[in-house]
Each structure stands twice: as structure tokens, then as C-alpha cells.
Amino acid sequence: MSASRRTTFAVAAIALVLSASVGLLAARGDNPRQTAVVAATAQSAPEPPRDTAAAAEPLRIDLLNRAGQPGPRRDAFRPRSWQPPPPPPPPPVVMEPVAPPPPTAPALPFTFMGRFESPGEKTVYYLLEGGKLHVVAEGDTINGTHRIEAVKDNRMDILYLPLSITQTLALGAAP
Image (cartoon, rainbow, N blue to C red; front, top):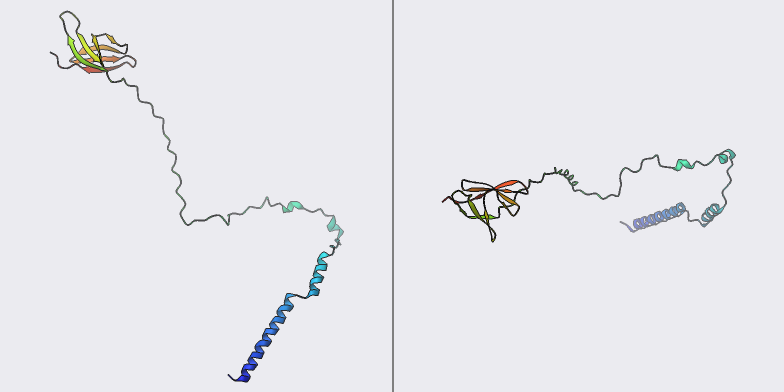
């Protein structure tokens, strides 16, 4: 590239930049006279309405009410997650009331220790309760809670009186 050509190119570039700057300043309106006119217009009092029929009509404030309009359908700022939603809770388990078990008699507190048989008399049985020895026959009541109901085939049927439950006590082999 020759020197004259470079000079022409530089002058054209400078002219282009200057004309763009002038155009921007004119478009922006940095003219102090225009600014003062705008400020003075803003400070002046508003003109009274020319149409008296429009001035007599009341202002309808009810048109500003937005109650009839639906609200936003979604919250644009709600948190979002890519994870799937949790599963629904399981249905509540309905427990049917369970009837309490029927009452039972406590275990027999007696241990068979022996018997005494005499001809023509009732057979007497010896029962041990803890450290206490009871001498009983058929039909006897022990401590007001147990009654000897029957004795047969090496077993003794004892009735627990509070619940009327019969329990069996093994007597061992007959002599």
C-alpha cells in the first residue's frame, strides 16, 4: 500500500468517526436550552379540562378492583426439583379391637406328697404348698381358692374357685 493511499484511508476514517460523534450528540439531546424548556414545562400548573361534561362525570374507582380476575396460576419463584415426588403415604391401618383373652387360672401351687388310705374311711391326701403341708380329702377347700373336686386314676381334679376353672394334679402311680 502506497503512502498517498494510506493518508486517504486515515482521513476517511477520521471523518467517519467525527460524523458519528456529532450524530450521537444531536440525537441524545444534550442541548441545555432543551433541558430548561422541559424543566419549565414540568413545573407549570396543569391546564383545567376544557370539556365540562367529562369533568362532571364521577371517577369510577370500582374499575380498579381486581377481585373478579384470577390470580397467578403458578408461582414463578417456587423451588423446583428434578427428583420425582415422594410416594403418597400408606393408608392408615385400621386395627379392629381384639377381645382380651379369657382369664386363666394360675398354675397349681401344690405338689403331691402322698396319700393315706384306711378301710371304711375317706382317703387323705398330702399336698405341699411352698413350705406348708395340707392334709385334704375330696370336697375340701384349700385357702378359700381351691376345692378338691374328684380323685380318680392317679389324678386329682382341683377347682379354682374365683374363675370356676378345673385343673388337674398328677398323683403318681398307685401303690
